Length: 388
Image (spheres, rainbow, N blue to C red):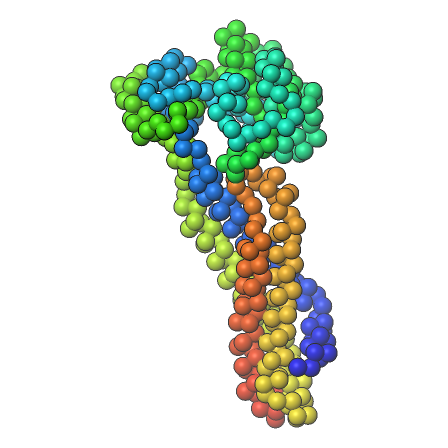
């Protein structure tokens, strides 16, 4: 193989070569992200707790339940604790600074999430004042927050009647040992919100968004679900109780058939890149028709000519695949910090990046095969007569 000639051919049109490498790199990078998204969604379901149930309105997740439901749910056999969860939906400075915020029962919440560890601050620090909150490590890193800092939030769903902001003080920072729980959320005292509503200092819907129902170890989840739903079968508002895995699956199905969607996007990316590389190699082959005739006249074999063109396509695609895989792995942590709020289990695996690299080599081989075969069959006289 005349490697020097191969290198000169690749660099004959540097802009074209760079664009080809860039397109393949982008494709591999996107495929890694798509795979990480799918695996993350699947992991969130697989890693869900077997002892946590979620009780919501049977109408919609966005319809609040009366607080009075809590005692009856606690009385269901097998239930250990019931934790109130309320989505807050506040805005920090600008809507683009989105992150999740929930009002919860601090002590119960902490006791029933063994996957979460307060790495800065203690539960007692959080409970010391109603305005205190805890935040995830990634959220702290995102905004540079530390324990003791204040987080002013504009109440979008629960605005203050005086027009002021909600001022929370960071009392702790948590980290999660489970892909099911992200590190980009702010948790505060549910009572702080409830008291504001009762005193008329806050506007917004009253009630509880979701009751997190924690079971005793070994309790029958199916029996507990049936009992909870039967308790409110005739109202005043019917409820739907689900396992944590099913609750997670609800969010996935809200997007439609996620596997089909991601597979469709991935197939579209591969289809587009294949034809883009094929077009590049065909253009290169057409431009070098006379050169091929000269090389054959000088004694280069048909196989070496075909191998030269095939190697060029594979070299460009391999370079693009290597760049895309490297970028995906190097940006894994940054992407996880951003995506974990939506897909807690998001992670780009090394074997997936390597598969993307291998796939780029295959695309190069397939895209280069047709032009290489054409050049192999081209007669020297025909090639020399070409005006290309």
